[in-house]
Image (cartoon, rainbow, N blue to C red; front, side, top):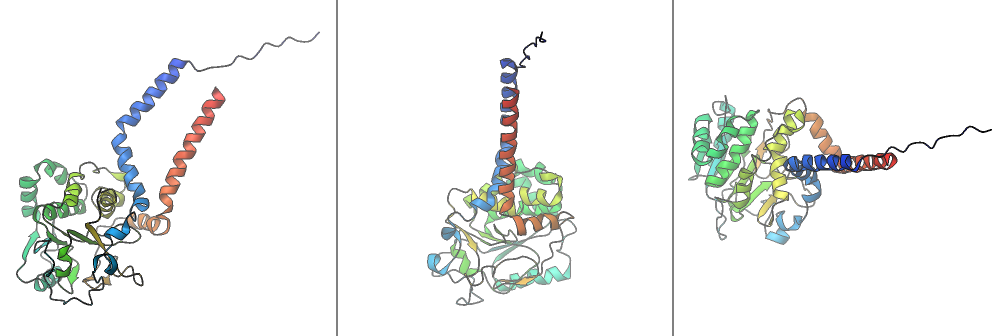
Length: 330
């Protein structure tokens, strides 16, 4: 006589538990919606950057502009016969112990002043910068004062002075070789960076420029301690990656010009390290880079286009694993 076996009990999750879990997940996603959006835009930059590139990368074909500057006088301080959209103002920033008192940087800055006689010039120090932020950007002052790293204050101040006054903002290690006059007919100009985006060490903009205003307004939203590391925190909250991301998602990028070289020499205007470009001798201080900079830069150089894909694949695999586990339990 055989042994009678009882049917195995099937464990089913109560519908109420599933509903509660789903509600918690949706609530978590809702609470983290800002972080998710910001992370998405930062990761998606390599995909979106070159969209409509023809319209915003300066070129002879599209803009009638000689990106080599060979056809422009080195002393040309105006865009004539085109209207000057960028006001004749130079901004240099020296916060903290600063470069303002260092003879080397004083001489470098003087080269830009000499190339632009008659232009207004500002050297922003702790006192003048704090007064500007307190008077014209009071809602951002507490955040600006509380930035973890000094370079964040400098980066954020770039956007503020550029929005309020317009003109040209320059790093202290950029030695000018010529005047910026030919570029003044464009509302915004910045040099291309490698492998994507642009450098904020040199920017030109009209006063009250809409895009620069968005850079200022978005500072609070992206102000996070990204990945718990200094370098990504700076790059994603105020630095080049941040500014390039806001550019990539701007509704109309046609007037936001990026200065790169011709096809035969696309990195002609890149300001990476000690280089000489048609506009500058870049002494390449980059003293703010921390211990994690080499790691992040290395990833950007060799895997910049792969990182978003890996991130997306990881999310998709995680979703499929969870789905399969749920099916087995069901």
